[in-house]
Length: 481
Ligand code: GUN
Ligand code: ZN
Image (cartoon, rainbow, N blue to C red; front, side, top):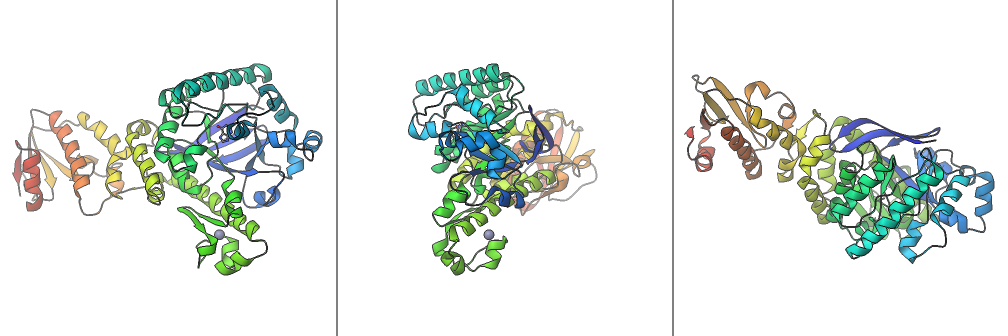
């Protein structure tokens, strides 16, 4: 019954993979819709028909419910919910973070999750609010780690247990927690206590909490971002290496008349069109949807359908090697997402280590593209380029015959030897007219090349407009135009 995770395709730190627990298998990245047994706005059987392979429900709600407790114990969770895919249960920790306490022990919640036939069991971790003093975060983390250890001891190494990673906003604690969870042997690792960050659009802090957690975790772990359900941030989270999301947003937003799109949320009351291809949006006008008697259910269906479609789009872009393009696109939908994207780019040298070597394309999409992993990968290779005694760097100028070696300025990468110009990533790169940001990055690459070849004589052949810029940047160089 142990949890297995296989990675099939990679892009940045994102993966397309397969999570297997017993005879249940789901493709990742995956969305697990949150199902509340009391309010099943979309019945799980209908979710299965929408391509949903797994869901998450709350064992604590089941254990406290007069209606559902005995039924789940006798018939099992899959039968009660009418869903035979993968079902993960949460422990009551979320209630703990909202209400401050719960009347269940770690052992009792895990036993209950086992007894109702859940596929993935979550111990009673403590989701410490991000704005808590460090001493409390540390003390809570100690309790969480003890409970994870206890779970392994009581239920065995093969039990399908999740190992949540806590540690608040402290990168060192997140990294330590990640390492500790992997050392305890957890293969399925949710990153916890991020809901307050997501609710207030604190994406920069999200990135600076998730990145160290990922660095501490084994790269073989399947990583769940607990409580993340809005599709606008999935691409960002997947780029960091998150594999699983769970969404209550589809239902909560529907209740408030809110219409999810991959770039944000709109109020159905204010919409004049339904810009989506799902069956609800194609068979209703905005006005009809607003006034439909089952408006909440229809809206929930739409919200879930677009959320699920974004997951498919992400899996596709990982296979194509175009995840950076999707991250760039999504993160321009809100300035705070852009902050998260820029924070992600600060980690590009870490991400570069897991990124794939070849991709379908490198499209330049503005100065953020200069800090992408492909540029870093090329520039890290520059010190290994050995120039001939007399080399020419073509920067749009004439090409005299007498040089032993010719390189081409390829912003934003740098000067690329002709024999490498069709290799990845330069061979797949498409850039618009050169701008300042890409030239600055390319010149940094040229500078690295010159300093690793101090005895070579390098001539630049530039357009008249570029010649001055190059003379200022490389005062000792010969520039012809
Ligand atoms: N749901 C949202 N955040 C958390 C968390 O940190 N831990 C658990 N167990 N459930 C959550
Ligand atoms: Zn729709």
